[in-house]
Length: 456
Image 1 (cartoon, helix red, strand yellow):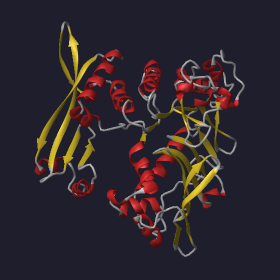
Image 2: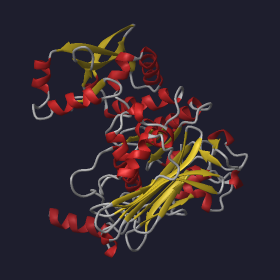
Image 3: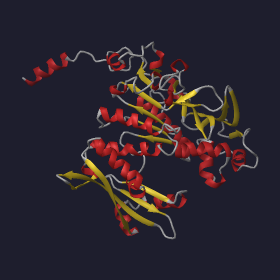
Image 4: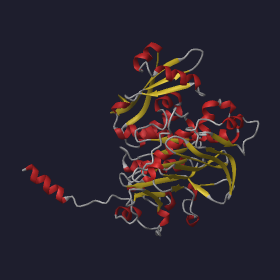
């Protein structure tokens, strides 16, 4: 679970800003089921974070900052550069960017972060946190000549990661990315394994047009999910009664007709290196290609369809691509609800309200909280949907705002920073501008008048 995330000098963030999901002690007794104990601490962490702000205020910058951090942890760097995106409206563009994350994994609280410029990782750290005490697992610095020095204070000498730390690694690549690219999964152990696995499997980042999971593969492979998804869509008045999926085996020659020849060799190499032995390709038409490693590679084309009821019979079938944007968006998000019932994971969904009805978004969050009542699953969303500003649904410390100041830099703050009565209609006061983070609309009548004159 994500406990806090700090970022400095990245996209719309100039000075350091912190998004914290540490539960406020002042709100004890309010939706206590929304909190989970932080290991070796009297503090608790929240299961939900909802971030509001006007268009361009920096909500998606927070999502992209965490996405950049995940990419730097898991992917080997290119020959040159770090592809960071510094704040561009001041001399800060030449200064380093900093990312610092606290999260719970395997019953431990970790703090991981790095400082990076355009060409290299300047500093990197991994700490184990217990109360107010921080134990160093490793620290890394890069000197002016590009030499990497890593002090593996908390790594066992028998760990292969310890030997790798002594070697160092590329200056533009994090040590975790070096370990992930160099060591087999079976060779990872201890804290390094915990952290890499959390970023790889537990931290799920979903953009406005992305699936949380490959839906076609889940529908074909998991009967329970197929039934759950059909039932949820039916209860949501989408008109869908049930879902089906066709799994058609194709040859490598067929695959070459679908995927560009320049891309196919890379996909096959990734399939050979995959721990799960499968690879999934999302096609622009909504279909998926499933690649399975075995004695000989096998390839499948997955096509999802919906079933509708006409009269007394369920007999009208549509390809998923012909369903509404809202129905397809809802189906994209449903794996989070299904997985949350059985596995711990942290979901960060950017623009959850894309094509979704306000009541469905409200119900989605309520269902998530009910589904993960016994699990340490967590969901963070960015949105404009003001119906979620409901203290019957959320705690005050679960509601956050993003707002730009006079220097065009994003500031983050929580509703819990304000003195708010328990019975206050938060939505009404937010739309009136009491908490900021709403667009300031200038006078538009002049534009309308000039437009009318141009029409004559």
